[in-house]
Amino acid sequence: MHDFLIRNALIFDGSDQAGVQGDVAIHAGRIVAVGQLGDAAAANVIDAQGLALAPGFIDVHTHDDLEVIRNPDMRSKLSQGVTTVVVGNCGISASPVHIRDQVPDPMNLLGDAEDFRYADFASYRRAVEQAGPAVNVAALVGHTALRQNHMDRLDRAASADEIDAMRTQLRESLAQGALGLSSGLAYASAFSAPSSEVDALAMELPRNGLYATHLRDEFGGILDAMEEAFSAARAPQAAVRVSHLKCAGIDNWGRSGEVLASLHAASATQDVACDCYPYAASASTLDLKQVTDAFDILITWSEPEPDQGGRLLAAIAADWNVSLLDAAIRLQPAGAVYHGMDEADVRQILAHPLTMIGSDGLPRDPRPHPRLWGTFPRVLGHYSRDEQLFPLHTAVHKMTGLPASRFAMGARGFIRAGWCADLVLFDPARVRDTASFHDPIRAAEGISAVWVNGCLSYDGRQVVARAGRFVCPEAAPAA
Image (tube, rainbow, N blue to C red; front, side):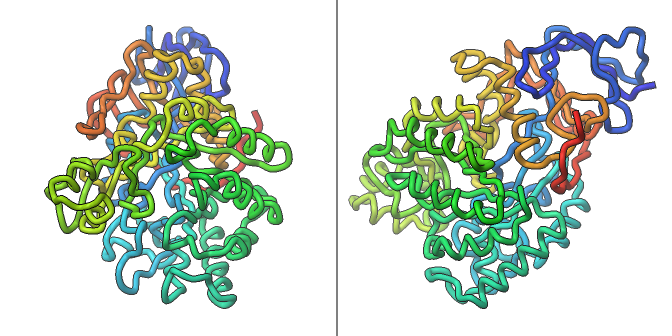
């Protein structure tokens, strides 16, 4: 007898093909049968008439490194249908890390000094497994994390000895199950690293290993920054994943065509892809270099001025009778949402066949960007159903089969017999994001049920089980 039998669902199997009506049986954490299953019996039978069944969504760009340990229910992700998160992005990771003094920006997005307790990758992996999060976890190693482990200051290039020490730590982490290397070269903590420093680290990656990068420049110099990323991966024959691809800054609006042409051209000779979140606003720490009056900047938190959280920087500056820059300096350290993208560029990047979906949500932010809770239903509801930017099966593919294959997730990302039973049942007519910039901590509508490793984990209202696992890179089984 099966554990679960989901009958009469519109099955989107993750392969970018139109949905097919049918049944799916689950037993012992695996999908054991797909099709018209007749009189098959199960301990739990779900009539999914009118609902769609998809592989569990894979969030390829998160900063949930410590959240999966602190708050292992992971309701912000499970309530969207996300069953697997990739952590360690933008060059910042929870391990391997040894904090000697203060946590450098932007690693402070992940936690405080006492939260970084994992001096090697193996100890982080054990901590995740002991916490038992509700979602699966795969982890990259951050370049900035390695830099701060071995350098006395981060506003310079690393020495040869420091690079050797970083390479050793990365090599050890890869052997202990890390997915690959990430960088965040736009941030002050890594901007002084020359291309040669990143190139040297990338040489530790195995062939087809992963290099994910927050580009050195997402503004006017984006094409050169993309070429820098592609170049780093050529010698080791590694795969490049461009993080949260965007055309940032009003002077950069309208350039998505040439940016995507660069990505497409590189894909002819390299394994390259990108992720994108479905909003025309970004979020991070408050960066003085990005302070401008060209678009709205929403302050989400401020350590010295906590009462200013939730207000526009321009309004704060007007109240204080100071310039935008002086207000930003007074607010630091702080977090911000930057409404610095053009909707047409976002749509074009989202629709590209090399684009996966990543939330880039910041779970420690007291007023997080709504992408933390709303990314995946927004793609399904707003962009696919309402705006018809792409068909529903393509939306599902961008969240499932495509990231599973591009991030070496093994037997995940597709609805196939023998594969892991990570599944989401949702209502195509009702699914939508409800989180907004001013009310961001709200669960999606239309997500009926979520299974993680064959265990019913979300019942449409609450987290009912935690069955996530640590995911190490592995090749997918033969189809």
